[in-house]
Length: 504
Image (cartoon, rainbow, N blue to C red; front, side):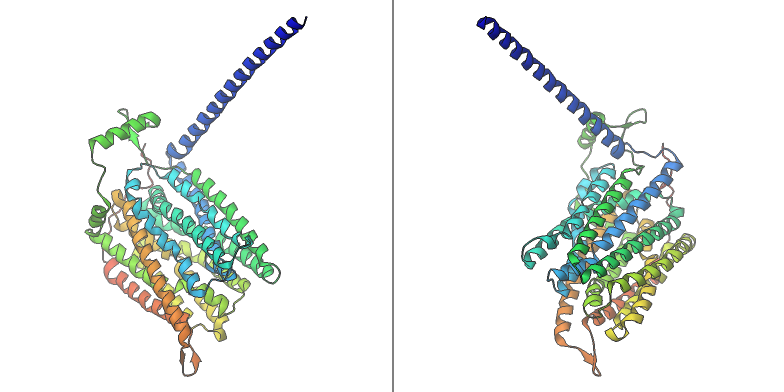
């Protein structure tokens, strides 16, 4: 009887073990099926999203508007007055705040090191979405004050996270620019980008006003709560940004078979290997740079960006801390004035876009940069005694300028760059001018430190260091305006008829 019971137990264990093995095999098989399904979905979304009609192009432009609005809002919430407040809370000086916020330009040098990789990839969508996802690092910055560590250590963490986040953003920027350029017909660039910016400005200004009120409310209570709310808001915007970009189509074809169909998976991999075997991997970075600078139109567009970068970074990175520490302007006032001025900007931006399509990007850009120069001039004559009215006047000129400055600079580059070299040349301009802007901000920071220690005054009237820097920026901006008048507007533009068209 005992022997029978033992045999039955062995049999049960053996069958149970077999059942467990079968269950394990089935679970593994299900896991592999799910994995293959997810990979197939990713391939379909990020590598097979070709626009097949004009409606696909329109939808993609709408999604880009949504994603870019979220991205621009993240830029404002993770920089300017809000980041300056966070860094001041962690004991960082005014000069260092300006230099740290300029890390965005130094991060652009990362684009140079990836030029060879960027030349080889056929599609940019996955790269752009992956780099956009790293904006979540800006969320973490606002939780650093919660750490029980010294202020110096908090400052280090802020710099590291901010710099790494900016590196990923900069890596994806030229690809994103080339991507959206390929979705917009050249004759409609001014109209589309102006409408896109109007929507973005409304969303950004509304969010900034809300965020400014939040910081003002918690400033006298518990500013840490304000930082946490802003961090959560940035996280939500990152999700919106990535989802919107993922829904866009990309009119770029990788490898084609003999029937004119696009290849994917193993077929595309094999085609890539054959391509590498049959031809060189391409020019090196130095040869690419040399080719770019031998092109007259590239040199002109680069010089324009160079002058603008100098005028902007010599003074603008230090104005946020000037508003907070010397002018003592409340956050709510700054954001309220900005919100009202941005409503005016929303109104005039589409008009600037239509004028640009009619008279050319360069001409409207010249007037926009003149308005930006006047903004710097009014910033230069702003002191605590006249801070409120001067801030209002300066903001009006600023809104007028920014209604088209970004669009105009980008538009001139698209007009001047060869289509087949566009992404590479956009990378060169962005990275080189970015590094230059960072070093200009360092020079500005050194000048700020020196001038603040010098106690400047004219006729008994105190002169603030930021006033001097803004006046220098104003003079250089005037030079930039003259350069556009005599060197950019005189260049003949060849229309691009390949962008924004169905190619299937």
